[in-house]
Structure formats: structure tokens, C-alpha cells
Length: 353
Image (cartoon, rainbow, N blue to C red; front, side):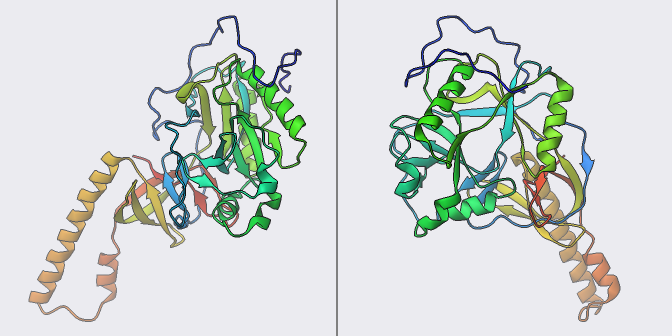
């Protein structure tokens, strides 16, 4: 059953809500954690690819990073709502659900487009000229399993023709008064006024219960989607992380060989080897990173002592099959990921303690 918004029309500025909304108990985790599962895991074996130069893997997805230093947003904090993780033990009945698009989040301040990392997104005039002089929050999208394509377009500043098929899907109106149901209706009015096939709203529907939620999630994952975003009914706009916006994904797991740690400027990761011999980058929390760093140092020390012992015995030189087997003994860890690419390579891998 698709969600039907209130019948009354809204003005270009959403009307305020005079009543105090009645909120159901928050079903989110106060502190999102990767150890939190959404649905039972399904095993899947495949390889990984390392993040490209254009993206940085993080606990919250991919971050747009310009190839060259460009304009950075200087207007303070973004008025954007950030979601928490859904608690699978909670009742989703009555919540508003829609597909979690796997693209690049884009904030329109009335004049320019910005990434969630406050970097300017240079879009051609034909793409932005119809957008209104008001704040919009949405996703630049080219379809399921198209994140790398979207990033390629966003970072190609000298190729405006690549934007001809780019879509901008609206899912909120920052700093707008009114319930989410009213804001969604107002977004529909804006899209109708813009009258462009490149701009639309993300469809939502009312969740009828856990079975409906799981069924909808399976449908989205099957077609290559990332997951579901959930809105608390009658919720007002909130800037920052909020329990009124929750995300739900389905996870898969795999055992991989740990090779070495990989420190980064904004995040730390592990370099691992899949059963198919693909080197992959695996994200992890700081506590896991420190623990794996200790194990890495222990392995290096054992290897140095072994090599020193072999040298003293005169057993150095040519690598024998026994030595290759000994050198190949590494720690095996379990990782989790939420989806796979068109090439069958899992995405958003992280260490599962």
C-alpha cells in the first residue's frame, strides 16, 4: 500500500504543524555498531576490489573526494538528517519505508550542489537551472549497482555530457517545518513544478509489519539495491544524527586471510586476501585495528626469528615448498559486507569481531 499524503495543498514553504506529533518508541540503537545485525546472514563467497582513488571506504559508506582541491562549503554545519541503524527487535509497523539509493548524497542550498563531505559538486547548468531557490536533500543516482558510475560523473568536471542521464532523487526538505508526510507531499509538488525527468522523489510506503519489511528488503537486495531507509511517522525535520531516520541492510559474511594493516588519513583498514585470491580493503573500528596491529607485529617478529634461525643453520636461499607453506600461514578473520558489484565483488566490507 503506497503512502497517501494529506489531501490539502501546501504552499512553497511547508506549513508548520500546530499539533505535537505522537512518536512511537525509538527502535534504533543509540550508538550504531557494526556488530548489530539486521536479518539472518546468508553465506556468499566472492572476491573484493580495493576502493578507487575517487572514494574512501568508511563505516557510513563512500565519501566523495575530489581529485583536485576545489570549493568547500563555508556555511557551517549542513542542515541534513543522518540516520542510525534499525533495531531488528523493534516493531516497524506504521513506519514509512523506501529504498536506500546507492549513489552520492547531494545537498542543494538553493544555488549550488554539495556532497555530504561539504565539497562542491560541479553540475552543468542544464541540470541545475530548474532547481528551486530553496534547500533540497537527495541522491544523485544512475540505478542499482551504479555507485562507481555516479562517482565517475561527479568527479568529471570537464564532461558535462555525462550528466545527461544523471537523476536527482529527493528525500527531504532541510529546515522545512511540517511532518515528514507533509514534507514528502511538498517534494512531490516541487518535482511537478520542475517538470524534468532528471528530478523525482524517492517513493515511500507504510510498513505493515516485520514480514512486509523483510519482504521489501529482499526485493531491493535481489535487484541489486543497498537496503531500506525508514522514517518515523509524523517526524519533524532534525539536523544531525536522528532516531527518526533509520537504515536497514542485509549482510553477508566470508572468511579471509589477514595480510597487513593499512593506516589512512581519515580511517584505518586491513588488507586481506579472499578465497579467490583477491586483495581487498576491509574497514574496522579503532579497537579492532589496534588488536590486528599487535597481531601483525607478533607475526613479523616470529618471521624475523625464523629467518634468523634459518640463516644460522645455513638453510636460507631457495624457497622450498615447506617454507612457502610456513610463510603462507596467516590469521583468518571473518568479514561482513552488504552487497556485491556488477562484477560480483562484495562492497562495504568490514571486520566482524
